[in-house]
Length: 237
Image 1 (cartoon, one colour):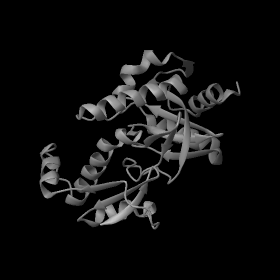
Image 2 (cartoon, one colour; image 1 turned 30 degrees about the horizontal axis):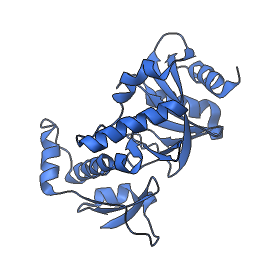
Image 3 (tube, helix red, strand yellow; image 1 turned 45 degrees about the vertical axis):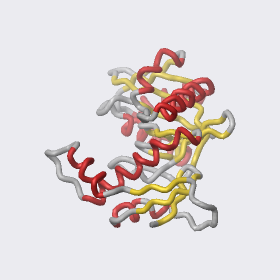
Image 4 (tube, rainbow, N blue to C red; image 1 turned 120 degrees about the horizontal axis):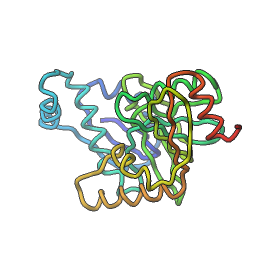
């Protein structure tokens, strides 16, 4: 059992394997506040997770970590927070989220921004950030669950821009109305099976879209892709 600070929640994770302890070491909580959540993964949960990919055997500790994060994120919407499957960076005081279908290149595009703009860009999370609302402001938080590249920071940024990445031989960026990309966005969110949590997720999604700019980035994997996206979104072109 250990306490962690995740999206400014105190989370008590009752884990059995060391994998999760090592994974979350940067997020350990040493304060005195009581836990907002308690997460416990059973061996039955681990077996069920493994059965979802019978052709690939995963270490039990890794599976425990996957189960723990899912259990936490299923509860988040009732606390004005939710999981996103995307990459988030902080740049010039803005939080910019990149979403794409698997294999399209959201991580590649994220790294292009970091490669071109260096210290101006801080990667908050490369795969599974948490979005949490305080009043009407959505904040994207880093988490230890950050994909195989492990791109993450124990930090947060106000989310201002949502970008959908599409492959193209040429680079262009244009703004769209949120409703045009609602279906694509819903595919990148965890929608709980519990009706109350699902309804709250939809409400949070609507709130997010009401305050964020929504962009489509059609790009290749050249540095020009990041330069054009930066110039359009940050506003220097």
